[in-house]
Length: 214
Length: 315
Image (cartoon, rainbow over all chains, first blue to last red; front, side, top):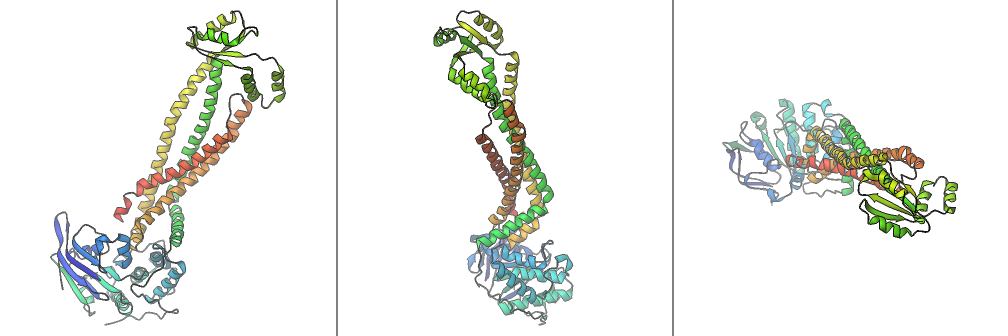
């Protein structure tokens, strides 16, 4: 599903990632850990095409990432962030439906799948609320529903529990694990929450000194 | 491992099977973008309104000036006629022969003959609202005339006096100093008006750019989120271009309406009163209105294009 071969990235001559190579198979649930500034987010940014100037090769679903149009690779990946990145003026429903709208999906199909996804993330009945009317955990659930609406192959999560209390953080990881097991969506989660992730039997990669280790 | 219990859905849950095909249509996309354009203008109402106002002012002035230029050209034509010396010759004398002699003199730069039919055509325009007066001219024995342009306009009175004293010339009508002055001013206005027009049009393009910059700044997060969700860059940019075009269209439509009012309540009334001087055709009015609307669309498009050019690279 994801393959990195000898990936390198520097900022103003200072190397952040050095010769990074690893593979994530379809359906895997993988944590990427490391201390602050270790290059975890940089690695994820390469995958969701926020960073384009790097060395080495990255493949997504067997295709070289560089050769794919940016919008095309982003349709294969769903992304969630620590800061949720929800649009304040849109309701919960509108935030989730936006994912379908920007790629021109059918309105009826969007409605049905949005409602079903909101149900699955535990937000049924809150479709008309605005993000500021929700708790942090609920906002992240909206972001998850939005990221999953277009049925991505892989969900990239950049510190998804960073803004949540331990209880809500665990619920969010539970939810991601649930989607991984029932729907076969590959999960690649960047985190530094050591204690929390220990509760999950999952493959873990570590970024240390710019290199990735198992 | 602990699994959080999720509320049971009332409808069967969507299975997010990977690689499951998704139906997308361009018409749906267009519908969403039109809605977003509307929302974008509404959210950015202040800047949009200011831009519409400036486009309206610029294009109203532009349109009115274009129409007035037509009027000024009419005045110039009319005055050109007036600064010429008009000479009527005796019916026994050959008009063409006299014209040839006059053309050979030093003080004359150009000579032309105005036939009876041409004179009647002018009079018909002059008396278009008073046909009974025109009829009296048509029945009269109107002679051919010679129109003389002088090499030195300041000599007009002296030359006119000399011509009047010449045998075979029955009548001399010559220009006034006033006409020459007005002609000079008309030419100046006509030339510098183009510069003023260009300044206004440039200001409109820049204002649209500023308004769109503001709009983009307010919606940086929206743009970023849309691009992250897989929107095509050209579509996101297209939405802003469409916003610019809509703003330009509204401004230009209002301007076209204002130009029409200026035409109807000022220029057309002027034409009714001075029909010998002004001749605003419906065709030139329609072309001006069409030009105003096309310019508005273009201003919106260019202003937004410049602003959004670099935006997508940071999405």
